[in-house]
Image (cartoon, rainbow, N blue to C red; front, side):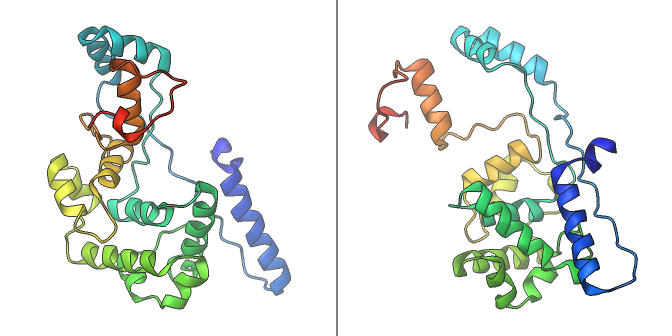
Length: 231
C-alpha cells in the first residue's frame, strides 16, 4: 500500500484534487483515488518455457541469456474493452502525448463514473463528440472508440471472464472486427494483457529485425530495409 500511495500517478491525482477542492471553496470530503491494480506475473511456467526454448535452439538460448530475467507483468484487472480503448488512443502517437490524451479522456467521465474508474462502453457511446475532442482525440479515433463501445455492448468484444475461456484465434477473430484494430494489436493484448504463452507476432518489426539479426546474419550496424527482413 505504501508503494502505491508513493507512486507518481497516485500523488499527482490526489494533489490535483486538493487544488480543485481548495479553489472551489467546497467543504465536502475529497475522495481518495483508487490505488492502481498491482501487476502480476503470467500464470504459465515462464522459467520452464525459457529453459525449453534455450534447449531447442542454441542461438535462441544465447539471446535469452543476453536478454536477462523474465520480467513480464500483467494488468490482470483490465478488460479487453479497457485495453483496446488505450490501444486506440495510443495509435501513431508518442507515448507521452498519448498518455496525456488518455488521462484527459478518463477524467472527463469522473462525474459519471467516479474518480479512478474507467468509463463503460455505454458511457463512451453516449458521450458527445465535443467531450472526446476536448481530450485531444481525432475524428478517426472517436469513430474507432464508438465502434469499440458498440461492439462491446453487442458482445462482439468479449468480457475479461469470457475471453479467458476463448482460444487465441477466436479472440483475434472477434476483436479485429472493431474499426482500427488489426491482428498485431490483438496479439499485443494476448501477450501483455491476457498473458497467453504461445503468441508469435510475425508482422512485428522488432520481431522480424530480431530474427534477421539472430538467424540470418544481419549486422547490428547495417541499415535495415524491408527486403532484409524475413517475410
